[in-house]
Image 1 (cartoon, rainbow, N blue to C red):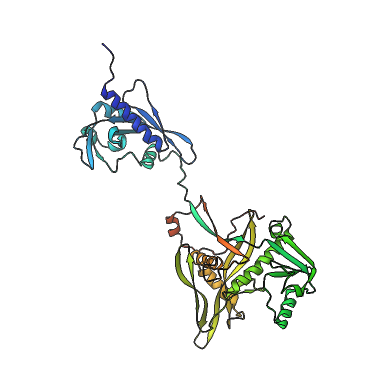
Image 2: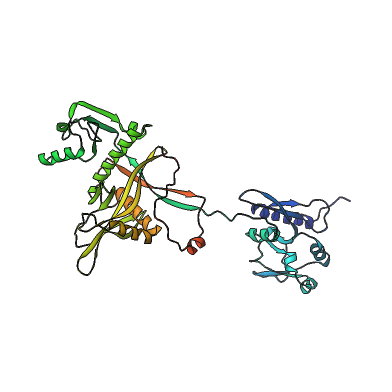
Length: 437
């Protein structure tokens, strides 16, 4: 007679193969026993998915497969009865034993930890297991299986899953600047002298220029009016802006960022935002000294609540001081890209223009109570304004900005940690880049 392999044998192999696929999907190893075995079909070795470290922590596995319904099966549960020999064999060993009940054709697999389940003589005598299909499903049980395999006093530790964090920086990308820098000799030693002269003559001079070492440098063509009458056109020269922007020499890059600042001043002046050279910050001016000033801005595709950028703080008799939303700027070159660093701050005046005597005290107080969300809103406000989404002229400008630099890091705080941490977040800028070009 020919040798036969029964359908039961095929079903058993299918069940083990199905369980092996699930275990490997968990990131653990599954080793089939092979050959003669008394009641264990294979072993699971716990493996750290993050470090890929094999631990040599072993769980024994017995797979029981069927193509029929289990005893008293419903949509929620069923009963499985162990044979006396199987149960005695599983309980006598020194390793944890997982009994996995599978029905390969319906892609179902349920598990139970034998030594944990049969923890009393009564349960052992009954040899009956009640399976909850939801709680005992093999899929998604990685943590539970790992905890069964690792003894509490083993000293084995798995790092918790990393929490990724999406960061929005305070670096606004410079998308475009003029292609050329024009220059010519001038008899004026300082910019203030030239400004005074243009005021006396009633000449309106564009603001994007600087005077350095006896020459006027500008993104505008200084060989043409209105610049031509204030410089020696015979000494005119035109340089490629990129040679300055990406120069290895600090002097050229410094002068380039100086010109960018003059462009920024002119750009913001259209919104009554002014630059204080001594305090080194830009600030919102007032439209009406008796009224607060609010700015609406867009955050991505949606409109955000308005932010008050100018406000009076009165006492019982008169206005005590005025607070202006402001920011400290710095142009920086990172990885061959220019960015505007925006550090939000405030300006305090006693009449809307001149600095208040106790301005440092007022600033210190608000910095102590202001949290990260408020600072982020201010950064996004300035970014929205500078990217011309808040009423600036849509005609092509000398200086154009893109988006705030955003990136994802593999280090962060879980929501539980953030909720439990009641300390205030310091709103000082964190320099996330170690090397500046």
